[in-house]
Every structure is written in structure tokens, then in C-alpha cells.
Image (tube, rainbow, N blue to C red; front, side, top):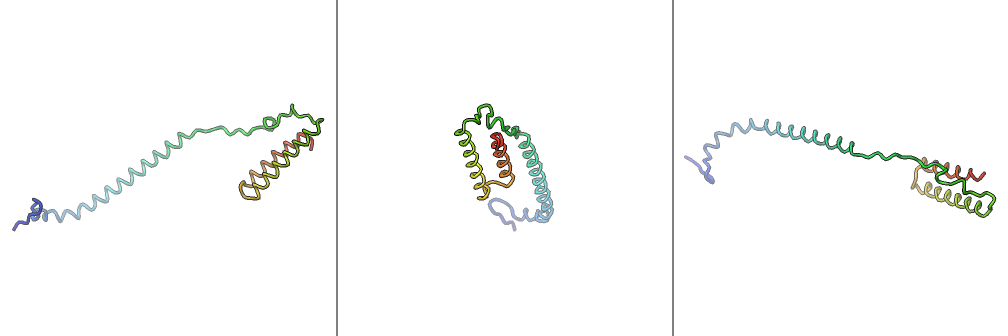
Length: 124
């Protein structure tokens, strides 16, 4: 007796049932191939993104660039005091950032050293 469903002979399809167990290995093989191809593509993408990074030279400005020592007139007391007050205000602002946790200890120390060098120009 032939059983037909949607035009297919089901009795002839039953002959292929023993081969279904054999195809499980193919599924496993294709999954492994897919994982290997995905891994290779991810390595290629990661290596190509590293090559495209543009290195910007990180030159720290020198103190002479920040404060032009030729324009400083120590004889003029008002400008001298104004500069010291500005350095003090900047020091207080940096301390508040450090105490508030917005900058790290290393940044705090480097900024403090920078301000100290600025003040040292004025003979303090």
C-alpha cells in the first residue's frame, strides 16, 4: 500500500531513514567548519583594525611654551601678584578635582609639578 502526501511517496522515503543517523556527522562537520571560518574572519578583522590606527605623537608642551618668560616683568608688582593668584587658583581647582575623584594621583602630581615649575620662574 502506497501512502502519498503532497505528491511524495512516503514508502520510498522510509528507505532513507537509516541514512539519517549518518548525516549527524555531516551536521557536526559543518558546524565545526563554520566555527573555524568565523574564527579566521574575526582574526583578519582584528588585525586589519590594528593597522588602521593612526599614531599621534604625544609631545608634552614645554614650560616655555606655556609661559613665555620673556614677557614677564618681575618689577611690575601687580602683574606678579596676579600671576601668583592665578597659579594658586589653578592649584586649588586641581586639588578639588583630585579630592573629588575626577583625576588620578599621577595626574594630580604632574599638574602640581607643572604649576610649581611655573611659580619657580617667578622666584618663589
